[in-house]
Length: 538
Image 1 (cartoon, rainbow, N blue to C red):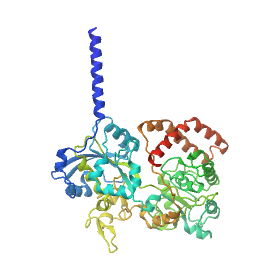
Image 2 (cartoon, rainbow, N blue to C red):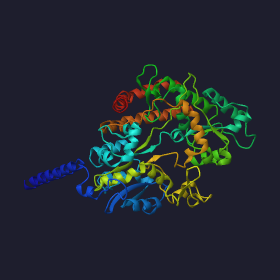
Image 3 (cartoon, rainbow, N blue to C red):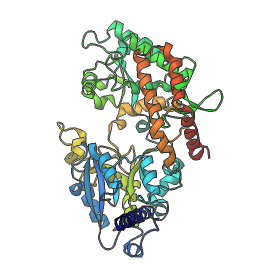
């Protein structure tokens, strides 16, 4: 009997401990402490009077610098701010595992940087109190980011979770940096067009005719084995052609949801007649040998080798001059938005200002949240953006006669070293996911090449008019979407590729639609509609 009572008592104690832990997880963030505020300079540099130390978990991409504890940009920023950052560099392939360990009760850092934290994770650990809400801190201590939200209201719309809180600073693209927001784009070999006496394709039928001519006429005159169309994945061509068939008319960042132009109702477009017609068109290109046969499995290195050899009559990827080299890449030019069989002409693969919602999040362990917000806010202002991408004036960049920032030879003086490898010796932006805004004035990636800028200008008049941001869901909705929602989306993509490749005949289309209905598509749509009404239709 005593043993039984002891067992009951121990069980009660365990339950009490779990409850206490649970209560701690749910504790509410009450704002900066008086001690922190006494040490904080609300404007200017240094950020704090007496030096503070913060621990930051950072995703380490192979393209970036290996050790941010000793890299020019952050060494200089430490001197400016009086904030000593201890960077925990986490290899990109183990970020998800390490995030789960940290959130699951491991050693939480003070903040997460460039970790691509998804909205469902932000929502889950924000509601639990593991990540702190940033709304008030942004209002008081982030004037640069606050100004961006005022200038571009879609930013706040995209990062505010369903509970009304902001739990992270995002990665952003300047809405005026068009070629960054439209990449990857479609290009054709202009020399081959001229060789065959053809004009730039303006419709899907003219594009088909061009690809067919490349296959049949051999416009390289034996220099290469021509491939009418090639890309790293069939998805790039599919993305660029959706607008020609009237689907994804609210942009490509909301998954498979758009608005039916006839009824004005929300639509799951992978069951629509227009979507079927798009897949039939792609199947026609594929079965006639106009698309690279192994496009569903091609290794990226093979794609790069083929493109650098000038084998492709057309492709969808980033700047040809940077990817293929100047000699080959200069033969390619951007394709305008193609008009489809029913008069649809729209480029829908446009990105919104917010690219990654979870670029910088602060945890409950952080004893200096206001100082940390001031620390990261600098990189959302003009000076900080320039510093993040260009470094230090007089050292890593100079201002030329046109008033433009240019890297010094110290940074890009080795023609035999790849661009990202050269700049990553001093800067950390290669690899992406960073908390700042990409601006044309300072970003030197493929999207800023002359051929990319010119290609984007051709799309300017046909951009999707109403662009929805990525949809944000409650934790309860996310649980369902991670279950049957993930199954639906996986099935749609698998069947897309099967229909295009011909391994599934279009005579099975009705069976495909019925199968989706069985997979709880109605509830999936109700969840998506609720998110749209919360986030978009306000």
